[in-house]
Image 1: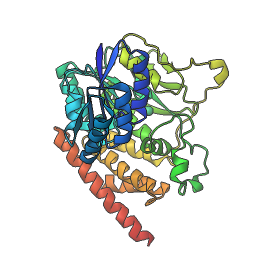
Image 2: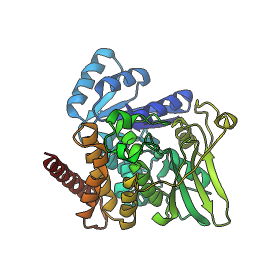
Image 3: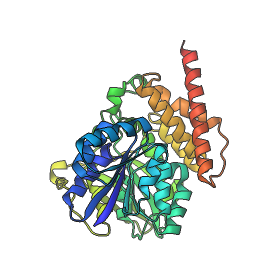
Length: 395
Ligand code: MG
């Protein structure tokens, strides 16, 4: 039995992982579940999966979870507070840690799991975007396995000769990341500025949380994935191209110097990359319906329009600048997207806020976790200032 800890258990990655793990109950034991603050959902998961540990970042939610579980029965030890996620990510019972928590909150526990030598199923973007070199180096030193479960990076991983991400990839000319283009691929550009949060989170092919759905609509998600790919696969930003592929069937490709292009295809369903990484190098059933290419019939590809999707251009700038620039890009984006979801900023305002923050940033190298966290904090504060300026300008 391999013990599994899931960071982000109440989100969509958590739900998909629990479904796949339940198909292989004799092979995987869910030993720990962690989330931010949703004690009601966590109580339900603890009842069903009976993990040894549950962790909530929010201390008050942790108290409520203790009370819920005291009534209902499972003998789950509840951890809470700022160090709870790191504690649960390093428990000796876990061989696998699923880093599925969204945002910078996932960074420290993911790094801790890497230092502890776990197999990490990596969905948290921030760990690579903020501190990619630190995470790769920690994994290299401890022997931890970093297996991407973001569908694109998992696809690239499947198309590479291996053995593991983070190592030089001889013979690779380019990585081609596919992007669905999100819900606004065909929306007239003048109407893009005022689309609502409800329209932005209605993704055409993937079911995901609200933050990542907005990032898919702006293509910032793809921009962050370019940065991730550079770290994971040891390639330069100019070796990563983005291709719009609205059907989300080809999950990404690798082009080799001999002209070969290898692609991974499948249903747009996170259970496939999760099952791949849980079982790797074995193949495990995922519960996903087989892909019927005759029914899909057509696969189309086009170049991204950087004027329609300025966030993709900004991410490219940050990727080339390196150092703290990606952390600042990510922080400004998180603040801007939150403001959009709360209707404090319109959709067309997201990219200008990020651009203004990047312009005010002078890039420094990331040598320690503190450097990344300081850049993250600076980016957030500067983005809040830009939001305030934007509101003053509107009033
Ligand atoms: Mg993705």
